[in-house]
Image (cartoon, rainbow, N blue to C red; front, side):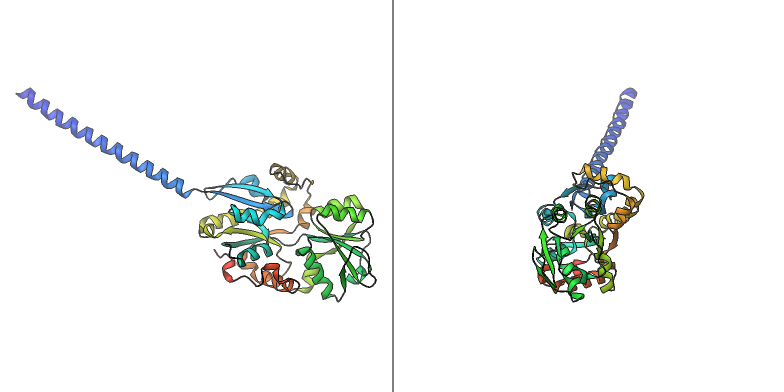
Length: 339
């Protein structure tokens, strides 16, 4: 009887221990799965696209050092410049694109926010003979990239501000500037090399390459010319946009912005690394970058709200030549991301 009582007590104790162990184990499994699932839901994978050219310099340090931002995986992709809007609309989450292109998409109803401006003008006119003023371009042929785009409209803006007449022509016209167009900087270079044009407009870093090969020089700095006529510094040429659903993730957009702010110093301190990073993403910019070339590309990082006055000035002045430049009207305040 004594033995039986002890056996019963022992059995009860063992059952109680088993139940406690089972409960603890079961609770632990549930908690772990819950944490794991919550973590997977919070972690996302984003695609960051940028146009092949100088604007991609605004994200070189991110491509090299930031495979994750704020716990989210980020995949970087360099695409042909003419495809950037389509890439963003059809699947990308983040993009570097011309500010007028993002404003145009916004005005068409695309759900996006401008996070920052990162390219403050990369355009220059080159030629074999310097000019004292825009009047010296009369009777000359100037080849330009981007008919109807920023390079074209800016040059027309400068000429009209200086009361210099122009006409679209591939041959010289007495008393006027003949404006001709090319599909690429390489085509501009060919026309100068073959003496079909005295001057050409293109962007850095191709400008440096052209001057080295053609014995040309910069004769007009578009950034300086703009500052002569406007009060808000250089024109905000390109910036970073994010899809609307990402813009609500304040922690992520702040981390993204902070990472991009570090990019300018990285470029200046490590110009020799730029070519290798861009090559990994199949960029056509196969130049050996120097600090001077980087500086000429005017890469920086300012928040959308900070640069809003300059954007309004830029959009307003260029719209006088083509109201479709940004889709017919200035974007509303919802275009600018505040964080």
